[in-house]
Length: 171
Image (tube, rainbow, N blue to C red; front, top):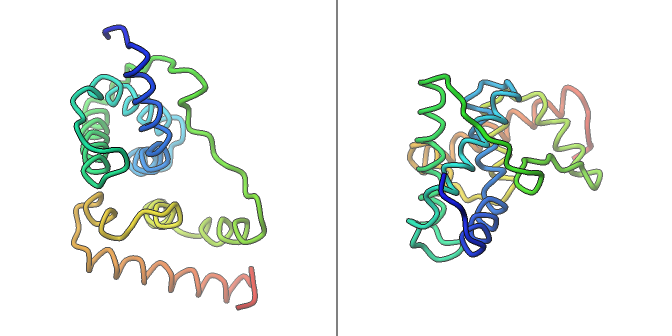
């Protein structure tokens, strides 16, 4: 890999910080819940992003940028899964995925409820919780916006049923 100048690394770091959770959730989905494999997959995506960052011409935080990162992540994850070869290099602590601990009661309740969901539903709903719009998720999953909306409503209904069963909170 070619040496990286400070400007490129700074741009990479800001993109990685913005999209690492999305990449992690896609990686865990591709790895079918195996965290060690998902970690390697997410590092492969980070390396691919660092390699191709100069080709990105979108504005910071735009939908075009989101789609570009998403396309790069999907192609990298497909390649990793197909070849089953991971050539990940250590990237340093600053770009590793770090799970955030719940900082309040509502977050704890949400995490407890989501623990009952399967991996795909949990990943989908986590992206919504992280602030991604249904339109963005529809393009990420390759489905129509109406299907994404139905899936969201289905997951909300599941969470409601789970809450009734386990009594995590009183509505």
